[in-house]
Image 1 (cartoon, helix red, strand yellow):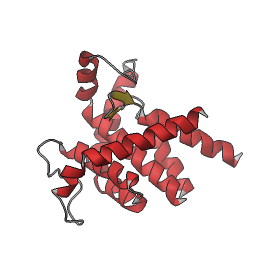
Image 2: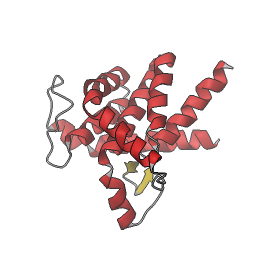
Image 3: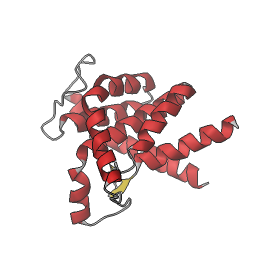
Image 4: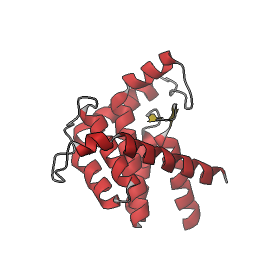
Length: 178
């Protein structure tokens, strides 16, 4: 029951994100445009990339979400992974999820690249799962889980963990296989 509630909350979040970035999307009607370069003054390149993949996932365009993540992962993936490794090596605690203070929110946003990569990996893993590409979904879920300290902002006013959600779906896949 808890997983169903979390899945519904995550889906609602991504539909909300898709609606929020619709103005950004409207600025870029060219479907062949580079998803690695933001066309919005309000979003940096990696945020635009992650939000594009999330919007595609929310719209049910799963293959486009996978393609978008793959197009830009090589640009930001390794650097975000190094950020995550550094936090782990230092024994740092990951930021809280849920509602946080303005100070905590600003600190979470300092790790924008890790946040964006974890969110993009979430969109890719969930899309591969929806496409029935279970073996590739497992790989993407694993990459997403590695980004344990990445956080995604829900427009309703709270942070959630893409890695935690990926772990929940990966666990369900593994349980179904055994």
